[in-house]
Length: 255
Ligand SMILES: Nc1ncnc2c1ncn2[C@@H]1O[C@H](COP(=O)(O)OP(=O)(O)OP(=O)(O)O)[C@@H](O)[C@H]1O
Ligand SMILES: [Mg+2]
Image (tube, helix red, strand yellow):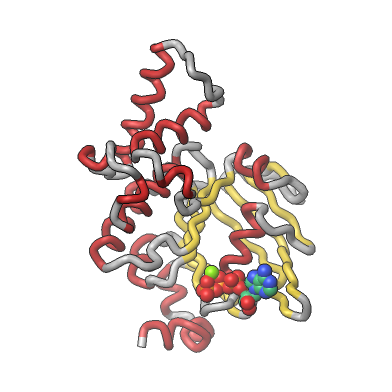
């Protein structure tokens, strides 16, 4: 891998994943600049989720390299990638669904603070943790009246906000988001778009999303994946006017 470049948060080089004869990701090279929101768009089956899996370490690449802030993560597993600062947003697991919103936040903050799960902790530490959880809730626009509610009973849009907050608890340097707006109505989509926008600069984000309004509002740069290959990377304006992209994807999407 080349020498680290200071403003490059994530560098994927020629990542390839084959499923039998199908090349789901075909020598994908993608660079995320520190602090940017980078959208990854493309038709169904283009390989977007596969790329997210390759980056998070959930799926091993057949070939290619990956570095986070100059640190080579190519052969590093998922948990170590999270520890290095590369996180993805997960849907709330069943366990967390039975906990309150605030308990979820507390657990996430605690897990990320390096403190162990103990029944006895100094009060001062409890206070630090609950203040951190509260800050996170406020930052992520989780209304105080929802904090005591069981997470699984929250409306869909609020659950997505909570998932986003839980992912942020680790203070990741790069956050991977795979279709955070999926299944949301227009109001909820707008709220989540505003929330992601408000986190600009706090973490570098790779956003896979089909909602083009959200993509064009949020993205500093956009990469377009078609049949496993990146066919273009550029500013929203450049992508909007890119003849190959319009032909392969945007034309039909915006029609
Ligand atoms: N575990 C797997 N085994 C076999 N084929 C797979 C597997 N995962 C993905 N694929 C195939 O790889 C291709 C890319 O799938 P992927 O889910 O990455 O696409 P996507 O761009 O995320 O699509 P969508 O927009 O519908 O979410 C598809 O043809 C899919 O069927
Ligand atoms: Mg997908």
